[in-house]
Image (cartoon, rainbow, N blue to C red; front, side, top):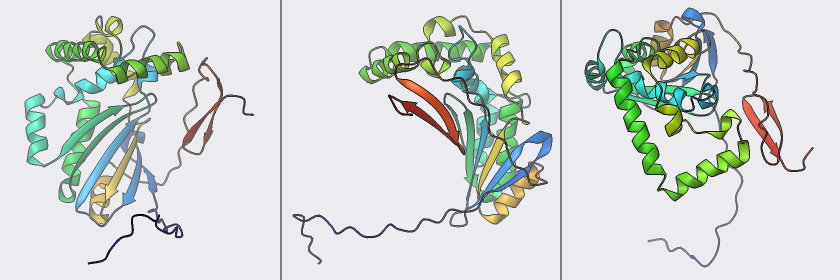
Length: 263
């Protein structure tokens, strides 16, 4: 057995090389931008549909609408109710997720590579053909209001909420995707459908597909992938009127915030 001298720090060696796969960018049906990333070490395929609208796109007085809309997507589509949708996901061994940040909503799904075409069809169905039935709207609203009430007793959540308000003030970045009691309570299905119609458009979305070559080809064909395309970066919002924030700018796909007295 090899002994380890824990009284001494291990020697510093050179940086390990990092090789990232190339990303192929094509344009699919309806103007959908498709990014494919080869990853041959697994028989899984992962799909991520990026909608460039997050909590910062919430209308005035409706904080939480983007998150509320995303939360309702897997409660059923025009073709299937929520139970049928999740039964189909289960049949394919697929996992569905929705994550809402300030600037984007990401809908994701993963499954075995041989189910790439079917899982992609379900992901696009969920994104573009949700039901938004009244009973589901009421149920999800109640769940989110209860969650807000619970978080009032969580120190970390209170600190995060205060930090956002102090840093960003009334700028859209100043509220979380969960929203507030007073802004969620009056929401109805019409407002949810309106937000979805305005922002869940394939000509503004990007589909990222990672998997082995067969899965990439299958999924890209199913999405109507064709000619190569480059995407212009989305415009940045105005800098928040926040304490100490001097400037925002973009470096490639990275948004940089500058605080303090830097120039």
